[in-house]
Image (tube, rainbow over all chains, first blue to last red; front, top):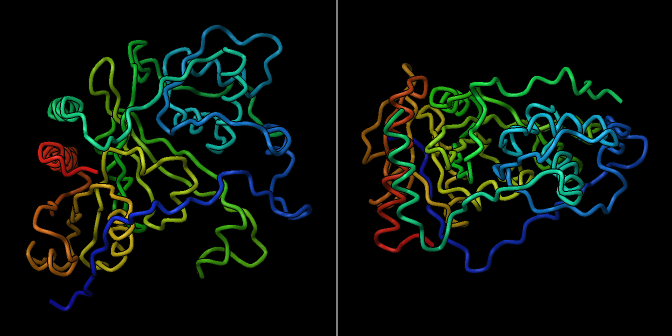
Length: 138
Length: 206
């Protein structure tokens, strides 16, 4: 076989720290679309709740009159549970911007978040079996 | 402000809405090089039309990759397609098709860390583009299976030759698939699930 060869790697003992998640704004004057991102996310340093791409968001009520257009749109979208990824897709907003909007709405208790099930050190066999069963029905 | 009026934003179609009983979601990542068929696979098994989430990559990522924009470009939008499969009334599975380069993974919180596992989609015409991603998954302890997307004009190698070339241990499944076909993509996901289940049985999953 003439294909190139790979060498396997192994789990690293120490988890490699990930680059910081904070907004890295390009220098003034180079921003592609500065107004839009600034207006929606608010000033730098805003607190954000840990939200996964597949955290399910559910709105409690109709948007209050005080809601911004983005918040109102978001609240209307998640009258039924919807993942953060889907919200990002439907709103055409970057994931990080949606998490900022959601942080405000979670703080104001206008939405609730249903956390995802993540991979555990000891996998939940019944969960894996449920997923297999669901796939078999496809 | 160019945000669309909230009245005009199309949400999920009524039939695409999740039931209120949906309590939690899990995710599987389909990872591979450009044009290898990630989005095709997501689309062939998803119950919704694949959607796209995006993230803005700023200076941090620029300059690392020669192909990555010009010198004057300081922010780039990176897109990721995904789909959804309802498992039960309570449980939802999301499938994300993501580029193989690790720097994209940081853009979305916990994309790989929380995933049940990954499907590495490969094209035998460009085997080497998948080398790095497999190494990254190994380093992070993310369990994965390898799916060879069968392109008509791609060279066909016996599985054992592929296993040697990819330096994969005996227990890691290598399967052929046709990402365009729903049944084939479903079988690929089933292979991953059975592999995860076997790891859970032996307690090998970190």
